[in-house]
Length: 276
Image 1 (cartoon, one colour):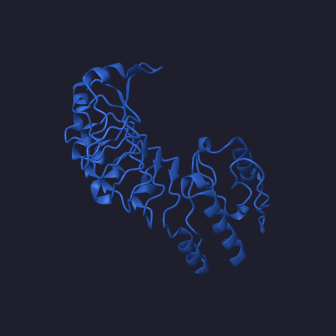
Image 2: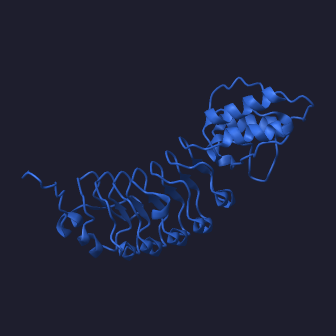
């Protein structure tokens, strides 16, 4: 490479792109250009707006084209592990998207457009490993969202509207400077119970589901014994006092996947027992 000149990266032609299209088992057209050293979004891809899935992950792309919204047939977009610093507003035109992965980039909160809230068919959004400390409030419109990944960011508190997303079953906020434990400890010192997160039965492993059902069916006793042995599965079943169990249709007791990781949940529970 001549001195003073940076690498241009892999050049993708329309011929290369067409050869990279494969049919998925469910009959969708998937274009995979992952891990190819691409530094600039290939403009030729805009001629292939009929693809259903686009994978440009693990490249070196810094910017998306303003007209990325032309991919109106997209259902699945994977851009993880690039160098993206912003997302164009036209992403809001991809109303058919069900899965969006923007993890491991260089995104800050200001670089997420409010138009992301137009993507009401989204079921999974991965924004982990960025530099986010808040989310566009327009995302409260994502009623179909089931999985939201925010791990390895800068969140001090969880956006309030996330608790209103009724179909959320998995929320990953690991390795953020969240103040949950501290806040819950302060609440318990004041005699208040910490906030309880609930998830659907389908989100629990068989072992935890069995334990939770057994505990829910038991008569509530004054002392309420947690057991605390842990055992197998995902954990969290024996750690809750019977007097705190609440039943809702289709929902089970609190589980770590709905708010924070298991270690943090155990810390909360141990602190509560010590105080009481």
